[in-house]
Length: 249
Image (cartoon, rainbow, N blue to C red; front, side):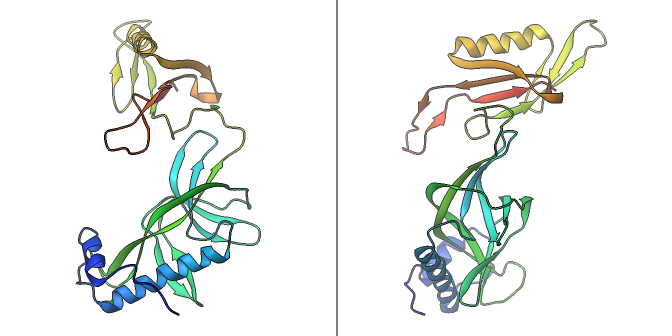
C-alpha cells in the first residue's frame, strides 16, 4: 500500500521529544506511523458514518461533558465508548486500523444516532522499532471525525459541563452556631447562608445568569454562568468569563 510522508524521521522525533519515547525514531517508525495514518484516512474516505477511532463530544444525562470520548469499536447492535481515554494504541489488523485504549468510564450503548461535529486531531500511539518495552511507544497525530451525542431527558436542562464548571457543595450544620450552616466544596468554603446568598447576589450583579431548582437527592441547585462570550487574544475558541454551576447536596 502506498502512503504519504505525513511524518519524516525529524518531525516524528520532534513530536515524541515530549511524550516519553526513550528511543530515537528511525525510518521503520515513520513507515509504520505513516501507513497507519494512511489506513485511518482511507477508512474515512470509504465510510461516511461513525467509525472506530473517531471522537465523540458526549454529554451525560446528569450534565457531565466529555469533549474527546473515544469510539473504540462498533458492533452490529452496540458500540464501545471510553469517555476519558488515555492515548489510544493504534495497530494494523487485516489491513485495517484497530484501537485499544485504557481509561474510563466505559459505555456500551446500543447504536445511537450521532450528530456530526466536524473533525478534530486525535493523538495515537503504536509500538516503535524497539518493540514492546517501557517507553517504547511512538506517538503521532492525525485527523478523525468528531460526533456529538447528548443522553435524552437531561436532569438539568441546558446546564452541562461543556459551558459550565461544577462544584459539589455540602451543607453542614454549624455546631457552635445553632441554625447556621457551613457550605463547603473542594474550592472554597462559605460559613453562613448569608455568605452563600451574597455569592448568588454577586453573580447576579455581574450579569451572570442564575436559576435555582431541585433534583432528587441533590437538593437545591444553583446554576450561574455568563451568557456572553469573549475571544481570547490568540483567537482560540470562545470561552465563558466566569462559568460555574453549584450543587447543594
